[in-house]
Length: 577
Image 1: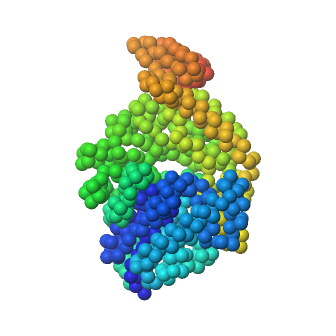
Image 2: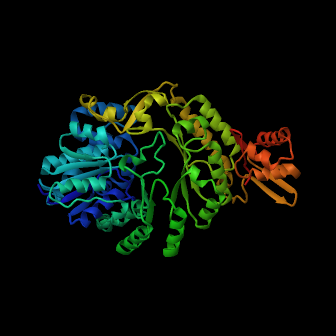
Image 3: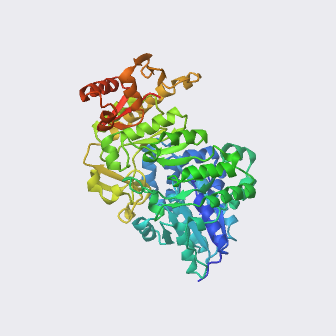
């Protein structure tokens, strides 16, 4: 059975200014094999219909999904309305939005009737905030045109995808891993050429359908919501570490892959030439091996793009200060997987790093002016009161280092190590999110549905009471670090810095509201400078073999008491910038 054409549907609530990379790559792969396809940007059309600001509000609320749930399951609307009422949504708002959305869907599908046919395939690729819109819209397309419906992406792995096909029989296929290869391979069964290969066999993403829509948009809407778009391209896929207990980065890819550097350069040049823009963003979840060579070559080949190559790292990859200097020289922003400042939590998260290594990385980035972004997670199933206390203790040492940009509530996801081994992580029970899918899906299908995001109960106490404590803790850290910026004043030096001439070293400390200067000389100065990188006590004893252990320990404890040095498991790090 041959598919006449392939329609790739981008439904609400995709980010308006971030056209889907996966869809653009899939379109390019299909074109490469002579398969006609089109990406339909229903997300943009819907935002234009209901208003861009309304669209953005709906994206981040239960109400957004509730609209499409109400259309899909009219008999379940009373339960949905009751849940919305509890969350403060005004009466009648859902009905108004449902009516507007039904009118939109009718008009949109009528305008596309010539593009859908019983023998065509409609592919819905799900990222975030797209499940219920995709379920609703795909059913309408199937019932109206008889089009074959395929789902891919998150919510489609393993048992998740199986449950979707069981509950919604109009979904013919689901693809959870290696979607580009898997989809084209499936189309091969329809007498179309298959596609098998590596990330280097993937063509440059094709955003032509996005620009066809973009050019037709009203100027005001475009300026407010889409002009700041980014065209994504790939440096790598998946994660080479693939061991963090909470993570599912590799759920869509069987292995970590680097894209060939020459291919990346070709991608940049092709996108710029074809679309007349340099608003191009590197998409990766873990930095390619040999990243310095990549950056140097990219800067050589594309000098006007220097500073636009944002990179992602594990903490353990950035333990050499020379790396921080290189990042600074090349004006590179970084995203680093810190996640926790509690030693016990890091072990269970299996991050492959220690707290003191995370602090050393942050210190190097602060010293060299590298913009370092990271987040901390709270409400982990194994989190205890002591983890919050320990995090607060650590923060008192590092107020002068860049705080996290976000405090993220942990989400349990299908396929993660925590999901697979709940008993090892203090998880007692897990299931669909009671206040999300539990409301949006009729109770009659609850037993069949396998969620990607899950609620859970834990052997530990409830974490709901600590959320505000976490936010307050990080808020105070941010207030201290960014105090000068809030006063519209430049920060000349770090809140904890050191200066030296000859045998005199001064540590200047303004972390706690006052200004303290500690003067070091002789052995104290030498010891503090020696610990500018992480040193074990054995390293220290070997370096200062003429000083007895008691005296060394006394000096170290003095630094620790002043919070100018951090200690973890008999390893020591001076903190001054």
